[in-house]
Length: 258
Length: 353
Image (cartoon, rainbow over all chains, first blue to last red; front, side, top):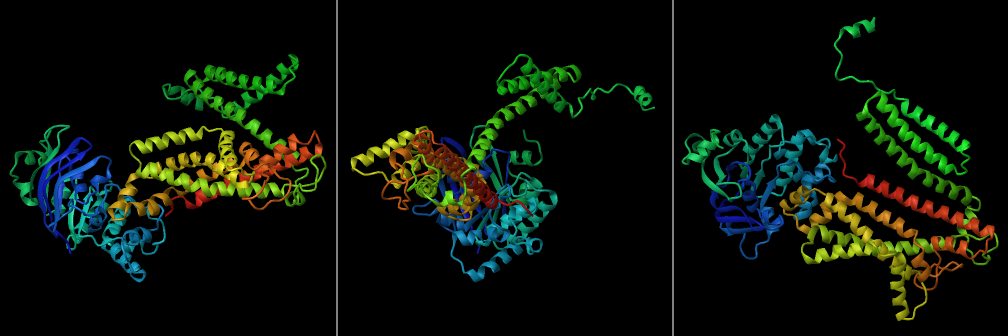
């Protein structure tokens, strides 16, 4: 079900500005990989290169290779729309479609992107909402607008929407930064369950969160403002947080970072 | 007792003298009385002068009273408030006056007979007759213009916001701006020159083409603004689900903005419904009922109003008909606006729980 991602020599630009430079790493299937690092170091940019969302931004451009189970996402003739069906994404701020009901929000990916059978639709919606731990809270008001939910519920609705299309990989860009601690806990628990089925990559500013949810952690940094961001190291989370091999990682994690 | 308690406390630095809430009304009443007195004493004939004097007295009076009692900062606040009120009244008085004149003069001959009969056998100076032919003409011409202008306008706006970048979109934006400034008579002359090239006689659809030219830039502008208001996050959320860009626009972006887009289209329809010049050139006017917009001259409401005034040689019956037609036109535009508001409210993104 879930797939492995191999990145090699990846460099991304915004127009002429080089945002990240020469990043290589491997993301293992059925695991959670966390990206940490200071603001502006390119974590989110790198995440967006993994499902070709980077090029949606004006001037966005990518060099290098991203292999999804040996298939290069930036290869010749690859359709970015198909890539995004395989690699789903959850954003920093909850963004349910305001014109759609809760049901329609979850069904949107199937209805608008893929082929589906009408009879299966409500099963998929129920399964996805259960998968996102939201079913019990919304099962009586599936036809109400999704924007009427609380922030944490909206974010879980967005996760349900993302997993409804059965992607192989789920990218999460600071999914908890706009949420309170209780909603954050609900989403972290959910990530633990979801990694049985999906490869998960999560960007976070919260180092405790990275330590709690991830199997592997990657530390990004930039030499100076205006310089491109780089991958400093990637290793098992335990090792990164106890005995990192690079001094900069230890400085950042222990808060001695300027 | 309470005074004694207050005296023991140290003076508050947060509390100052405040005018009572009825003071603006009192100042307004006072300045009106004073203005009437000045008007009577100075024997000013025009009531407009009285009103302007009252407005100036109100603004000055508010400032002086507030400055003496509350201090200069509050006085500036109050002078801004009173200026806004005066500006509001200056804008509303002509509007109410216009509506009142139109309604009081228009209801005289406005009845079912008037709405269901044409001017076919009625001379311009005689009483009787109606505007059925003009209503038919207006509905057909404006309807056809909307069918042409609204889709082109909306599609242009979609191109500019969702796809456009570089020289072409800059050129399109520039020409839309130029089109906004085209006087309606020039749009009429443009179509007229085409008609003359092929030696055609006036007909309703020619008017529709000129009206569509006038309508398009308005639709483009309003739709563009509405599409820009749709948060980029929604587009990204949709794209990240693997939904193609065209379906994202069709199913996510347009539904989110549909209320505003509809309002924009309705407002532009209201604008072209009152155009007289291109209709006069291209549709010509016709006292008989002509249901076919593609053959022969037609009438339209604004053209009817103009012709009743211009060709009646001072006949009271024609003036009455013109006022009644004006009232019908205002009601038509009014209904369109109400419908637009209804659609906007109905389609607006829902926030309820």
